[in-house]
Each structure stands twice: as C-alpha cells, then as structure tokens.
Length: 255
View 1 (spheres, rainbow, N blue to C red):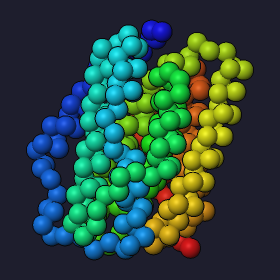
View 2 (view 1 turned 180 degrees about the horizontal axis):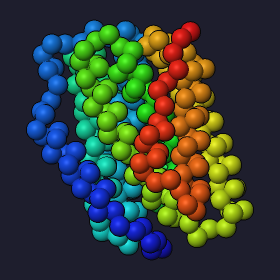
View 3 (view 1 turned 90 degrees about the vertical axis):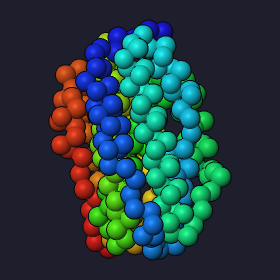
C-alpha cells in the first residue's frame, strides 16, 4: 500500500549532515579506556544488542511507501543505529567487557515490530526511541567516566532527531483516519509502552540507580516524553518536529 509520506527532503539532509559531522569528528579516544560499574556494563550490553541489526525489514517497508526520499532517510537512520551499536561495542571493549550475542527482550521486541506493516513497525520502534532518550541522557549526565559520557552524548544527539523524524511519518499516516480509530490505536500504543517500560525499569534499575536516577523518576520522564509523542502523532494538526524536540525532558534525579 502506497502512503503519502510528504516531503522528507529536509530530513534526508539532516541525516546526511549528521553523517558528515561524524566523519569530521572521528571516533572518541578509545585509548583512554573506561571505568564502568558492573551493573552499567550489563545494561549497556543489552542496549548494544538492541541497537544492532541490519534493518532490512524496515528498509524494505519504507521502500514500498512510495517516496524514495523517505526510503533513503530510513536507510541512513538504520546506518545511525548500527553506528550506535558499534560505539557501544567499542565502549564495552574499552571497559574490559564484551558484547553479548542476544537478549530475550530484544528478540521479543523485533518479533512484535515485524508483525504488520510500516506504520506498526514505526509505532513499536518509537517505544525504544523514547526510552533511549531518557536512558542515554541519564548515562551522559550521571556516569563519571569521560569516554562513556562522550559516547552517550553522541548517541543522544542522534536520538533527539530520530523521535521527531518518525513522528512526522506516523502523523501523516494517521491524518486521514477517523477519531475513534486514532483513539483505539493510542490506547494500544500506551499498552505496549507500559509493557516495554516495565521490562526496562526492572531489567536496568540497578544501572539507572547508579547514575543517580530513581526508577520512578525515569519512568515518569519516559511517560512524559511518550505523551508528547502520542499527542503529536494523533493530532490532525500535530506540532511537528521543532515542538517535539523542545519537549524532550531530562530524567528525574534522586533516590
């Protein structure tokens, strides 16, 4: 099914500009090594698995959406996710740790993503993107290791672009649907977020607490960010990318 995706030229230029900046900056200074708490190492290993993957399914679905510019932007998005996996892998290596082959939560997440079409995949993918905003900001601001701070800041910079990028595509896909349909879709989306957030909070609570962020505070901020996403996507007159980026909050701190 072909969907009117609109003009994604500006987004494509954003991704191309980010790729040019990465080539200009080069890699972090891996030689200085990293000292990370064991709980954070385990947490980063699981996030590294989540960032891995070739994205063939998503790229294929985007290619069938009827907009080659959007499809190319998606290809560059997938490349950024692979870059995140590489950065996290190198960070773990610098800390004397290894990557892991897989994790059950990532396997389940990927299977749900691939169930239906592009819109469903993007909606499920958005759950991970919103959680990632809070997680990488918590690592950037809470870890005491300079190399980990650098890596988290680089990834967070990309994630702040990914969320409004996907929001714009989803907003267009819901534009012609009825209000009852959007209400049902919103309710199911919130239900998926509740499940995903519960898994993340339970699985990564020790690492997040070590960064100075309480489980309640982390969950509260993810919920606030997701509320902004749902409002942006489901409103026929959504705020668009600039308004959404400005609403990305900082995780609450304190025990």
